[in-house]
Image (spheres, rainbow, N blue to C red):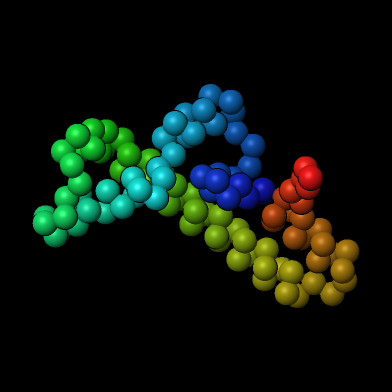
Length: 107
């Protein structure tokens, strides 16, 4: 398992699936709008033109939430295994598997 913090997707995915998720990625502003649409306070609704694709974006946000919950569960399990690891090699292997390779410095 490798955790990707952008979109919180797990593991390798097909190119078409990656493209579809990139298109349906729900940013913070869109999440705010979705919360206002589905909330009970109707005094602060977003502009009407942003109601476009409400259902699609709601489903995408719920999909991201499900993936985030799975990622958190897998990271918590890895942290538990790392806590009880008795050797640094075992600890490093657990962390490398959970977090993936280190980012490129690209400096």
